[in-house]
Image (cartoon, rainbow, N blue to C red; front, side, top):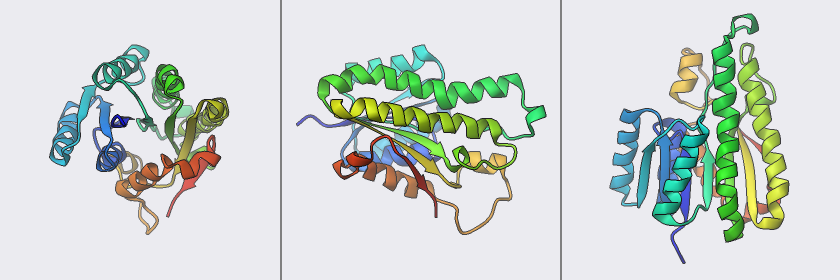
Length: 232
């Protein structure tokens, strides 16, 4: 059986980097992408040490043409796509009357449009395969956002509903989808928004990665389309 292939967006650091490595350890060939060249170099180094076959690409997934290029290069190199983890995210924080047009648009481009573009691009191949798993990284902010996270929370609520829809649409095709609504995770994004955030309930990226790996197991197929809260 051909080696399975996973695409992970936002793979330059934190959650995306941890997910890429965790899937590599399960035997997946990894395609990961992001905008930070230095971060991509670090991720490539980690994947090289792991010995997995991989492809690391510079790309802005909020651009339709760039995410389609990532999928095209994946197909050219590996000939299949089994898992897509839509992890890239953008999270401006501030009172509603201070949110700029640019931040509003960028939030929905990265958190919503990128997931739509990636899903649409891999769907035909997953239909042909009769299998595939799409995991969209959401947030508990989609259910109860902190003050100042109104735009971010709304974008993640879209992620949850989109996941429900593609989960229902994909089930008869063998395609499964999940939204993983995360609590606080120890990442640069968390610290940029809440530098002094403390508490015992902060997840580590590796904990998230282990749960993501579990979601590709057929034991989760019955829950396809679900938004799954994940917190300590």
